[in-house]
Length: 599
Image (tube, rainbow, N blue to C red; front, side, top):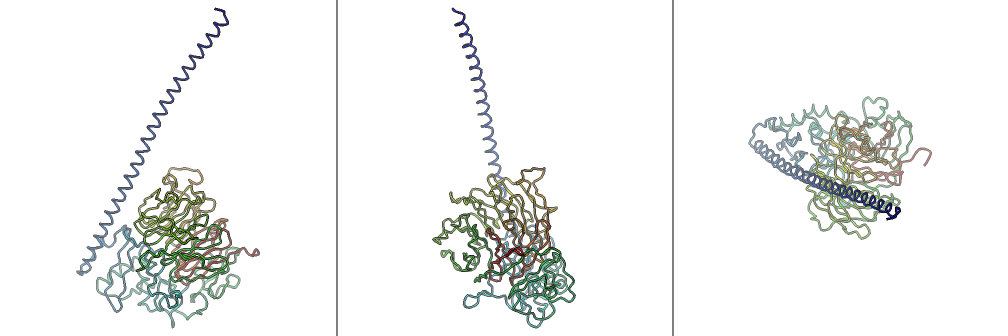
């Protein structure tokens, strides 16, 4: 055999051996990959089973807890009916949410304030009934208990019925001081007294003794703002005359007597006014654009993505208005729903393309309306209690919803079904998608803000004590950068959070950093938002005010008083320079804000 042929055979043999070696290694790697895939799939299945088991356990625990709470409430009522003494140990159920004792009849009957316990489906009925429970009031203001006026005019609060700070613009529901001076203590005191544990205890003692007399000392301690002075000019928003007003107090704009504020720090129109912070450079100006009258409480306002339209939700219907003209162009109401009773639309949200409007209501249903045809495109069922908040993801496919049933759910528009259910310990009051759709945030009655990965459902942030809110969280909103979040609470504050997960950071605990706390509102903060440029934080409150805040300094720029009842909802226009407000005074309003010198 020639040497060259022998050399070729040796090389071929070597190649054959190397090929066999590589083939063996590939087979080994393939076997290892199959083994790893099997382990991964097994562990993923186990994890899914664990999650399902935990969810079922939570549901069972919730049902058992609700059953026990109902049984305790029933036994308590029986004990009260028999005139027995109620031990302190059963005065509070549902994690500390007291059930107020029934007041004995004295003249006109008065319903006891509703419980805000976790088993109640009426989590937010405190404000709806004009009362505040021990853990705070509810998301929507008073119902149409007095009925709409003839001709479809907005309802007005009954005269002489005092609420929290009723005779001033600081707090409360009613729009002007009673004629002839302050409200009688018998009207103002019981409700104000209920704002403190001492007042509740005193009420309970009086109820057991068969007395319906008001608790004047407690009321006086909790309502120093109650006007004892003159009757005010009804043409402007009501404000309180104070015996000894001090100089401007920075963020405490709601403490100021409008008449004594220097002219350079205020602006007044026919039925609204603005007070500016004397400790911050005056940068903004505010003007009224449109007033949109409704037949009932306006629970929510929301702009379309292009800023051309604004939607509102009230009793039984949603409306869409043209922002430029202020004309109503669409009325959406499900005629198949029973017409008996109230059915408030608690949340509205446009799809990013503006073709659909999603509405969430007290009947536990999410309706997605085709705006052009005014028909329901989808109707999502699954929540077990009222729906309080909705938000569309930027992809236009997913909708997040929050309910009093303690769940956040994500719905798929294309599939027409729920694709993710996130269960927590207490009622969900507010939800929001991050701008990139990666995260969904929710505020809860348990004082926490949670942030989940929207695709996996894993909890990535929990914003709570020691720097968190001290009372229920009623509103959350992502900043335009998607890395920060603001929250508003019944503790009367707003907080700005830096999210760790959105910044790609990880730590030993799931918690963002509270970088700013905004204080100045005199009552519950019901709604928060950021302007599209991230330059300003907006907030609406039960004190009837809207405030603009600088997120860099936590200073209030201004306070706008333009409603005669709680400001339940604030929404900035995505196109900038406009914002909308919805209130218990049966009005929504569109406002313009501008930088001074750039109008």
